[in-house]
Image 1: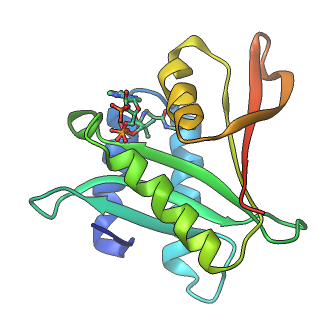
Image 2: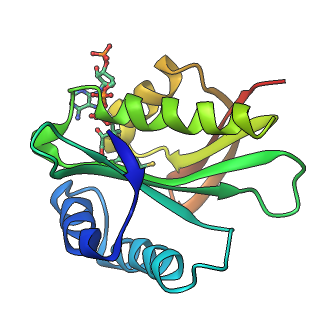
Length: 157
Ligand SMILES: CC(C)(COP(=O)(O)OP(=O)(O)OC[C@H]1O[C@@H](n2cnc3c(N)ncnc32)[C@H](O)[C@@H]1OP(=O)(O)O)[C@@H](O)C(=O)NCCC(=O)NCCS
């Protein structure tokens, strides 16, 4: 079950982001900033956040997405994470498929996702590729020396 994030979900969302062990404290701070923009400024439409629940109605994962600035009918999947105990159960796939349905509903053209080339993101890149995303660009040494920014896209029209 996927629903818009609410203020009561904040601790669970930041907790699962940390629990993945994938993100530095600086990255967690950026995740929190996006969540705070979404929760605190209901009039803005740049960042939207949804959560996916487990069978017990607990927060299993979340995703931040929004229209790509300055690009026509394009959408960014900014951030997603699924709690370690909930990974591999299809929750991540459910979130991406939900976004694609939403993009089609808005007659969107393309979804972009960016990630890191670090080996620890191998399963993450595999996850996007399996969902039909193609690597369309790579910025060498973007995050740090030896850590490229990898850009994936899936075109819907
Ligand atoms: C990447 C991520 C969001 C995927 O979510 P998920 O709920 O584990 O993914 P799903 O269960 O929908 O898995 C879909 C496929 O990905 C694979 N997969 C990716 N990461 C996996 C993991 N950690 N454990 C098990 N399977 C994983 C599975 O093989 C699965 O394939 P299948 O459906 O053919 O069996 C999640 O693993 C995660 O939060 N990772 C750490 C943080 C991260 O990388 N976020 C993205 C930053 S760009």
